[in-house]
Image 1 (tube, rainbow, N blue to C red):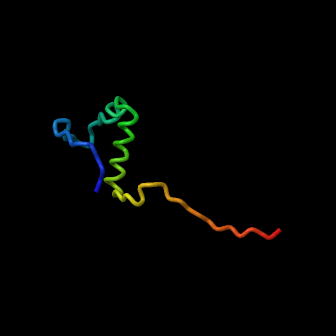
Image 2 (spheres, one colour):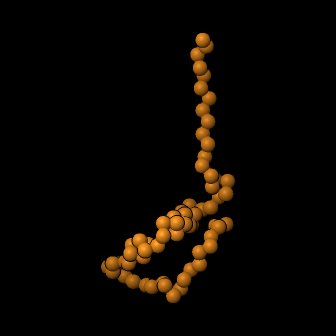
Length: 69
């Protein structure tokens, strides 16, 4: 399940053609960095799925054989 506090604002939704220039960039540049980061994380979770086990950074361990002294 995706953890989110975002709601879909149907009043801000519009339909356009591919030939029209979107105004997304101006909107996102007007938002604070924390909100932009949270929206980016929500899009990542929607696209790739949310898994609380892999939510943290993966630790990789390697066993190294050292020569005897």
